Length: 310
Image 1 (cartoon, rainbow, N blue to C red):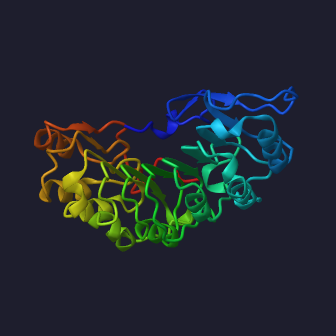
Image 2 (tube, rainbow, N blue to C red):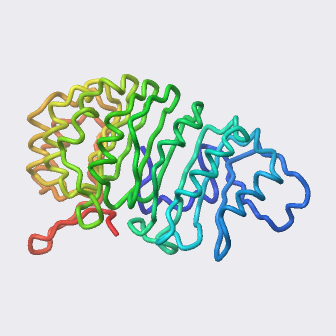
């Protein structure tokens, strides 16, 4: 199961099952081998583009398998667009790149909904061999429909995803995608998606290899659960995550009354608002499934909240 939000650090130790190598421009006089791990680039009060230029100059980037872009200067007002453009322009220098994370920043540096992202379509077109793409932050995030033959994981962590972005994901053809995870978030932070926007994903026609589906961190989690209950894609999933959001007894009732879920290896519902009787019903009905009902929340005078928003 993917790590919970509080366990998602800045990937400064490991990423994509590789040890992270922190890039340091100081002391970069001599060329450095590139294929021994995932490289981490971040700056404070400096130009991230100059840092990337130095990285391409001093590292054997042709063997770099994974890259993590962390903090860039004024990332709450300056978008990732120049970073995306720099990566695309240098795609020929990263032929071995298989995993990429843009915006791997903890809340101590920048709250997730303050991170300015951009259109990531060109990353998928410029890196046809990319297998894993992860983005943190939904502000300004955009994706046009594309077909990518080799992408196996797409994860987007946000406090609010736009309907346009969700529709963009849903319109993509990802024949190799096994893991799709969207932190949908709340309207106050840009989450103007609708459950109808998710329909092509739940149909699954463009996702024939999907094994893990995460539609998480939503203040509309009950509606999503109801849609998932009859979604064709569910029958071939191994893992389903409807966690981190405002899931109440109404949503759980819909799941229990829908299609069978006993084929799942894991049903992740952590951070929920279920009553104890409903928790017992879920556990009894799905005793053969690994159900995560941890992190139970209690509404405070009718106030419900997601795990990650600002």
